[in-house]
Image (cartoon, rainbow, N blue to C red):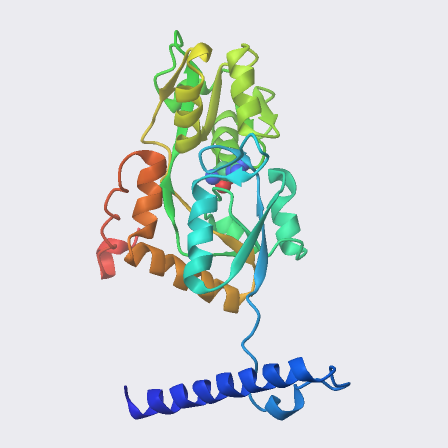
Length: 290
Ligand code: ARG
C-alpha cells in the first residue's frame, strides 16, 4: 500500500469507526433535534447510489421487449444493467414509444435511452452517444415467394418501416420523400405483421430484429434479403446533450464490461456466438479520409 493509499485507508477506517460510534449512541438516546450529522460534517457521507431512468421502446426483441410478466428484458437491458453495475449506478427501465423517445430524453423525462439506437450524425446534433456497443445493418424481410433480391428491387413496391428509424431513412431515400408506397408503423413488429397479411411487399428494419422475428414466426413464411448497399450501423446509448459526467460513467462501465468478459457473455447468450472481432481501426492519415 502506498503512503497515500495508507492515509486514505486510515481516513476511511476512522470515518467508519466514527459512524459506528454515532450509530451506537443513537440507539441509547432519543434522536437529537439536530442529528449526529454535525460532528462529521467535514467528511462527506458516501453519496447514495444514483438511479437513472432509462427509456426503451420494448417492442424490439431481442434487444428490448416485455416478457409475460410485463418485465422489460433483452440484450440492451442486460448490457446497460451490467454497465451500471460496473460503473456504480442503478437503472430503472421505462417502456417509452419510439416516436417520443428522443423528446423524453431532451426534456429530461429520461436520463438515457437504450433502444437499439443507431448513432447517426443527425442525431448527434441533438443528443450525445456512448461509445458504440453493437454493430448492425438494415435487412429486408419479404414473403418466401418474393422475387426481391436486392434493395433496389423495392423501388416500385409497398414497403413497411418503423417511423423515424434508420430503416425509414433508407427506404425514404430509395423511394423518395413523397412516395405513398412507404407504409410507416409505430413499431417494427406491426410492420412485419402487415407483411404477413400482405399489406406491404417488404419490410426494412435492423437485421437483429428481422432475423429474430422471422425465426420466431415460421408460420409467416418470410425470408430475408441482405444488401451490401446498406451502410454499417452502430448502436449507442443516448444521453441528453452535454451530460458529460454521466456519459463518462457510461463509457467507463462499457469499457469495463468489454474488458472483463461480461459483454461477450451477454452477447453470446443472445446471439449464440461471440461478437466478431471489432473492425480494424482506420488507418491513420490519407487512407482514413474519404
Ligand atoms: N436502429 C434503428 C434506429 O436507430 C431502429 C431502432 C428502433 N428501436 C426500437 N427499440 N424500436 O433508427
